[in-house]
Length: 275
Ligand SMILES: [Zn+2]
Ligand SMILES: [Zn+2]
Image (cartoon, rainbow, N blue to C red; front, top):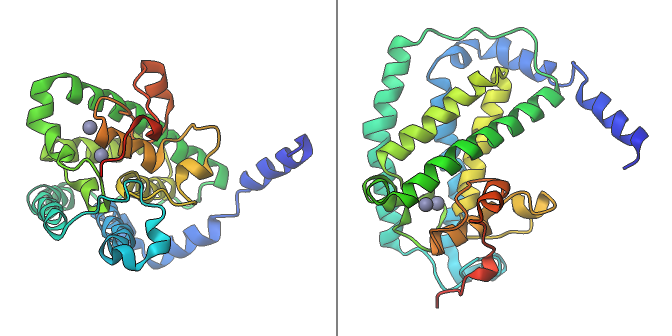
């Protein structure tokens, strides 16, 4: 891409009016729902189950879908009915005892948010989403490193997530309560710190759910984020799969730079697939 093309792209992305019709339609037709403090929770919880579903179907179909199975990272290790049920029950427990009470508290104590008239530009939205992913990546890298290096933290809070050395989509939220609360807190707080537009915040939340599930899905499809994003700057499913096989590597959830800086980065070639 030459300089003229690059500047034409930037002008296009900075165009104020691109997202305005979408924002106006949302703002004018669904204002009551969007202003509710419950909306971000409903958005992320429903995104989680909707995005998990196709991966779950791939797991259940197994060898009947040979084309899909060629992308399985650990081809000989598939979740069994009991592992799927265990993760589903942990997820249900977390939702009943943590997410639901947090939702009620938000609904009771937080006033409805104001919807601004102006939509973000596409450039603001993309920059906001990337900024949020980078900030979360840094926070979780530190949290994750400490929860592996300090035995008490590992055993008490993080070990449950390492029940499975061959991850699958439903293992994404097979988490202890403290980890779920921490992740939810940063996902809510970071867009406020970065002063993001609500549309940017919601786009980040849905994308964050997607990339977190993709990290655990157990498949390295041709459209995996690590394949689409060049120069190895993004970890994606194969890198996080390595973390579940070799838990002292690949602590960052999304990008590769923190693990490279701290010497904890490992490629899939470092692992011997378990038969
Ligand atoms: Zn994981
Ligand atoms: Zn871990």
